[in-house]
Image 1 (cartoon, rainbow over the protein chains, first blue to last red):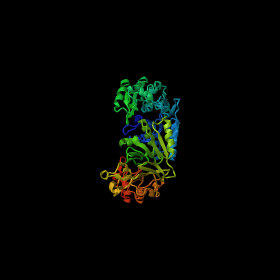
Image 2 (image 1 turned 180 degrees about the horizontal axis):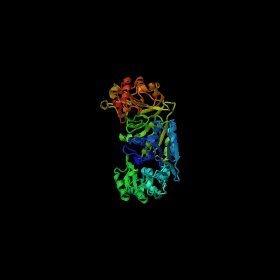
Image 3 (image 1 turned 90 degrees about the vertical axis):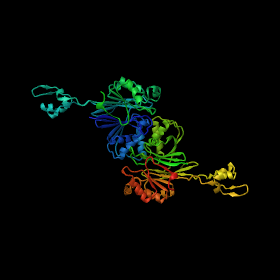
Image 4 (image 1 turned 90 degrees about the horizontal axis):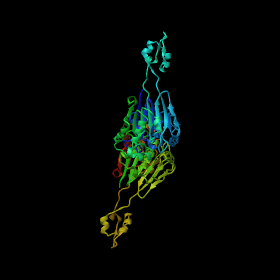
Length: 308
Length: 308
């Protein structure tokens, strides 16, 4: 099953033609989760031929403009293009009033239901859960309240091996129990171990999105061993003071969090406009954490092909 | 003196990589007026190397998103880039609450003063005036309250002809009176006509921005003889019913308004996404009003070179 992250934008603060503010699309088994929505996100989605009507859940980390100014435009375009299925937004409560005021000013009654799910400022909770995935918030430490998001695929049931199941003549109504790990007792009393008649399903994946935040060791336990950590690295390490002052992290700090939490892969982003050569940030982070990658607009990471 | 209009976006409703929502920049003698501000306007300004910190006045026609969703991003970027001089916004009152709520949600106190000037829903008034230009609103007829804007350069004083002034030995303290039309009485009593010692200054220019609106003959008198009329032409003429229903105009209707008001030039825009070949709209409008041009992102119209 596909589990892919597309970077729609990964720059901080001020958008330009080439550099887009934060937005990411996670395709988890054909469920599409949008994470942050800076100005122009709907345009990036079109540019990368990602049908935004397939997005049913949007997570907004915080209310600095480079993380949500594109949301109202996306909501409006979904409406104008005839959407009628519900859209769920997970964000701090203040965003609801901003959306409502803008819809009211244009006298717009959306064709589709908008479900607003406020994020707690103080608690880390499950925001969304179904049979395949569980998504929760994690509290970050920024200049204003800010939340990261952790996406954990659930362990899939085992896959039955059709030929062997047929060989033992196992009836269909037993399949579910076997997928969940039951052995099979043959007519002659022989116990056929579950491992013989099933195999592991595709591996489960996990993703943590952590922006914007200062260096925060409280994160380490919460993201331990995760497959991919997106951690902001707004500044190079010589700007540690500036990073702290503005509620951000350096390359070194992002890589240190990755190392201490033993994540499998690190993706850095949210680069300050001051850096013309982003490779310098990459080199710095990689020196501390080997499996580092640089975010860039249009990058697609397939979790099935990541270092694990 | 420069009097130039740059089209930053001229498409309706839904932005794409190539098609940008409404925004225009009028450079009137090095005063920069921004008219409407759809999503991505700040990016277009950068793309066309127009320094947005030179904009001191922004006019927003109405509160449909394709005309203002880029405003809060522009306001924020001006702030982040260290602006300290005031910014004046002319728009319907509801926009102020939307801006205030977004600034408050991000805990932002702007480095510069933001002056909000509410537009009257019922009266057409002067919104801005200085010694060189007068800007007023004109009520349009759309699905929600909507305003056009008329920019009229003021008649300049006459220009003195330096050589002749020197020949008659006219003292400096009389220059102003002469620029305003006074004759000169020479020492021998001879009356030197003002026309001999001065010449016409550069011609004055006028511009009317009219979007979004249904066909509205009430406009005709108000824009009579104007140099350039930007009039929306969302649809081709076979979509007259759809145009009326959605509060818009067809090519034929825009051209008819141009013709009846005897404007010198017509610029059509706000094209529906349904049209892949915009030339078809051009051909239709031109059939009724010869001096028609098509708006497109990046188009710059120099009023000194327009048909007059």
